[in-house]
Amino acid sequence: MRRRDVLVLGSVLILAAIGLGYSLLKPYTFHGSVLEPLQSAPEIQLTNFDGQAFQLSQQRGKVVLLFFGYTSCPDVCPTTLAEFRKVFAELGPKSAQVRAVFITVDPERDTPDKIAAYVTIFHPDFLGLTGSPADLEAVYKAYGVFREKQESGSAAGYLVSHTATVYVIDKQGNLRLTFPYGLGWEAMFKDIRHLLNE
Image 1 (tube, rainbow, N blue to C red):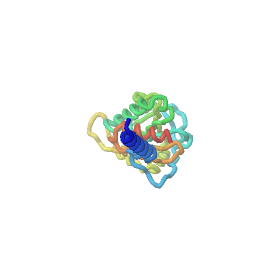
Image 2: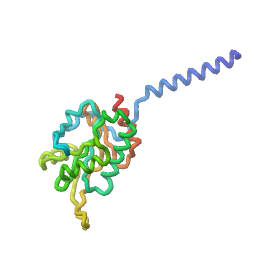
Image 3: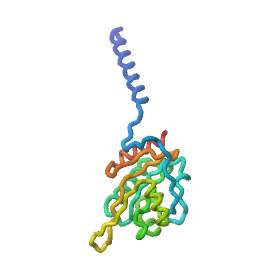
Image 4: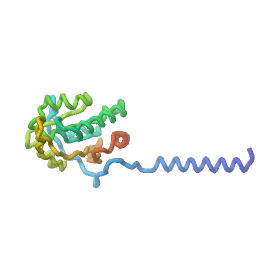
């Protein structure tokens, strides 16, 4: 190989190495909305559908996906939980480090048995929480959750208009991100994978 060709090849390799180094050092850009300043997620003390007490502060070391919904929801809730299921499938064994938590906004109809039957259709490890009206109201207020009954005029009864955001809590218990409805499971997966690797 001629000296000129060696120099050209050497220059190309150096530039490639610099580019690789830059891409490795470049900070990750989240797909969800980053919440700043960094703050601890408000505590949640409710009851899982199996009667076990749930405390958010006891989930440290795991990434928590927090979603507020109801079992009679015709669209947003099943779509979101189906996306969680895809994220868990893509994570494989790492999904054991993630908690998917569904909190009812319709406690009048969502009994523990009904919540259990609903969330476990999507994944056996998903949690479904309820509690007393006072305990639930405290959580709704802490997370800024909107919920309002709307008469549907059908035999199915009323609908509940509610916040469709997913709240993402990191392994240190910080409220890091929100996922808007419709973001898509691939974007969720990438963000969650990054938080797991931090």
